[in-house]
Image (cartoon, rainbow, N blue to C red; front, side):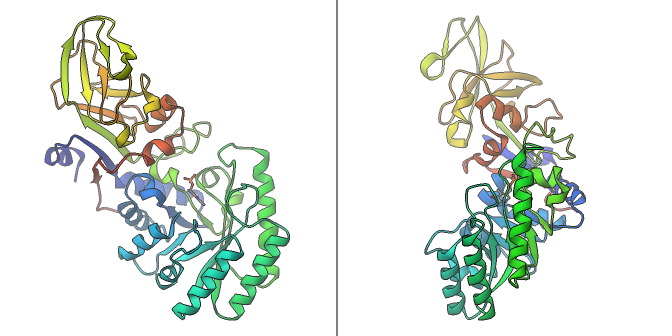
Length: 390
Ligand SMILES: *Cc1c(COP(=O)(O)O)cnc(C)c1O
């Protein structure tokens, strides 16, 4: 469906249009940068707010053979949706008592960072009567999840080798995650890569034969070929967002933003000068003017921190949020223009039709574009464009 057709059939309060042709093109562009590596499309957090399943399907069409999520629940939902059986699904954020047995039955690849998790997955595999697919995660310096190098790694690898010999599991991967890959030449990058190679060599020396070794998120996929190994795991770049404007704009990186967020003006009215606007009256009209009411608020994921700063395109002009962003709505000063109620207010999009981008909103709110798209709430319908196609 074309953009205009979708809008004609869906006169909505607000909508997040998701251009799946752009997502497919982004996947292909990223794959071209890592031609020797398999591609894991990271679709956690409902595909960074874009919709996990439609994005997963589009990524698979464009050549992704792996999908990655944070939680096992997210991964199980994808498996239940009936993607091709040969698509591997990995999840990495487990807590004790998690759905390990369901994960084994659903053929998920599960990440294990420590002894408690290895014990639980071995139990689950025995109960399920089939080996689990386990990927051991090394903390090479991020200081978050993952097993510490040295004794901890030796113990974890040793326990995994024994469990593999007993047929309880297959170690399908060895992996890690960068702390500062979005800051090119940050000294931690070389340190993490070196330690990753050492920890992989140790595990392989003990007899593990992982199918995939991987450490590259979006910025490493874009800027660090030596980090591609057997598989890359881009998230944000697949959605057409630059991991850090210091690396380049999406266009510089050959990417196109996938989400476009727009709303229909709920009211346009003329007011006198000196009129306070929205809670707290943090904006006062400088003179007689027109105000436009945008029916989106922080309950929809519009950051309240962008009060008085967030940009919106209305009838070809950039306007700025006037005063506070409320739960469900905010106001823009239209400077005397009188677009009809129902006129489109574009919060962000690819940026090539004059509209702001998610990065502009991130800067207005003092955050990163990841957070802008991911937090767009469930009250905003996603409208999928170009769902079919190569
Ligand atoms: C979120 C995540 C990714 C993707 O990160 P981007 O910066 O969005 O590319 C990759 N690997 C892990 C472990 C993650 O949690």
